[in-house]
Figure 1 (cartoon, rainbow, N blue to C red):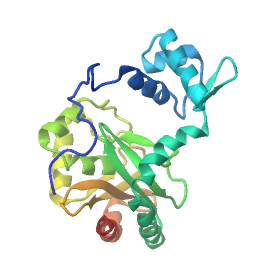
Figure 2 (figure 1 turned 135 degrees about the horizontal axis):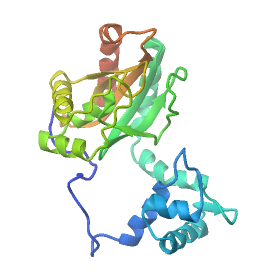
Figure 3 (figure 1 turned 90 degrees about the vertical axis):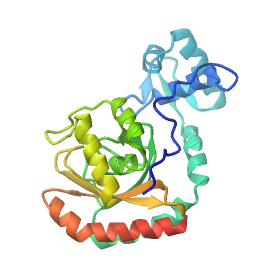
Length: 265
């Protein structure tokens, strides 16, 4: 498997204002990203705190977004509008592979009777670009655009495995290595070993490190040059499917599905 960076910006790069860096635009993105499932409606002060801006700076950006139709306000609380989805759709529509991959994933879900997801790597996180669920098995509500930490997910560790060791370590050091369950690995050297194992075997299984009772296994989606551009996984509940059973009975089908999607590139 190739070991060169994915398209996300390296965590070691620190852009500075200049001819090639528009600070006001970056601040606008900070404001947009301050909204989340846990903070869908925010006051001006909350947006300023969440985006690291002054109240005056946050206010100017919010009013600009409101004028453009990306934000609405009732005079106190600000909320994103559905128009914000246009920004994410621009990415998805520029990658028609996901429309063609969906039938492959649906067939896999029918075969293994577990949820299937596709994700890409963005700095220290994975971002879901397609999901075919069977039933709700996680406390976290996931959909296209949802983000999860790379260090404790099967998709994330496998995607990290396509990077060189120095870049992997840099991204792990930039991560908030929190023990989400009693099983979560947070030691950087141990995580480096897990990523190296995923690189060697070209698949990755994570057992209850993101959430108690949740097991997932991932396989790579690669282009013709052998570079990993995304990863595919299936997730199940430990009380009905053990890690051993998932590896023995579901991993071969997952690898086959990932190869089918890779062939579409």
